[in-house]
Image 1 (cartoon, rainbow, N blue to C red):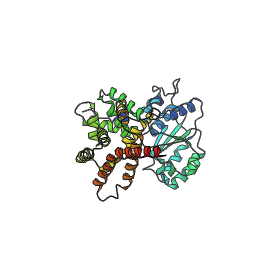
Image 2: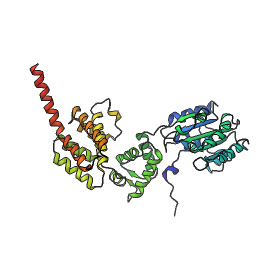
Image 3: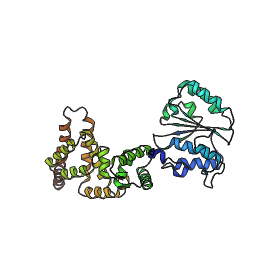
Image 4: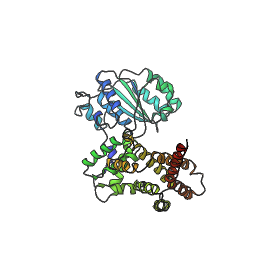
Length: 381
């Protein structure tokens, strides 16, 4: 039986060009290599799963490549690249600071730094989760980081930059990695789907990208989960929301239609259906607030770019936003926001959400009465 390799490892970028969503980082690093302006200490900061360690490895591989390409990428055919690809390169050292965070671990590393590489120009030390080092370990590392030998390059990676002492920060060239955009993640998932012969629905991939919250590694893990869950090699929207226990946005469209029709009974029945499916009332409130927000931004062509949904969903939002007024949406958002704050302190949480729905169902009537009263006031004056 063939061993399964998770997508996050199988499709891990091997050159700067294949790194997703971090062009500002890869361009700077390539220019530094091209112009021979390499710093001797780098600090890669950012959320989990955005490519910090991957970029560190690509940088380590590229600077020791014997035949770099014209666009400053590793050739993948020289002895140095082959050694790196087979994890047998003697001039690249990785240290996990989460499990090697003592003074002795850093002292051992500092002792190794003195020796020049047997082959290649640089010895590269990649220290992952560097914020986990103890204060004593940081202090033991300071002098070496300030005045390293010419052949040594340090690449530190961390998700928590604020935990690193200022004296370390001042000795490093700092690169801040961004959360990866939903569109970039969705496009990468399409690329992998094509490679793996997996059929997919655009809405499903976009939902996975949204759920990943900017972390490509998380998106790939969810993608593997959905492919494994499905009977065939397919990723469908319904299977995705079922497996990830996400409330279908169709419910929010239905609830909003009921509210605009001032039908309290319809709104309460839909909410009851949602509860019976095992969803939490608080999640429903948060999702309803997000739905009203999407309706509001879709009312203006200038703000529609703020919506991170598929084209099909955009059309549905534009259609429903045409039925709503800005006054209704602003008032509804305010009611939902207040209910969100007081939800956890409520003794009867179901009734708490139901009261919100009742208030929202009466909003159109209240807005109409207010408009009539305003007109009458104008006539009198």
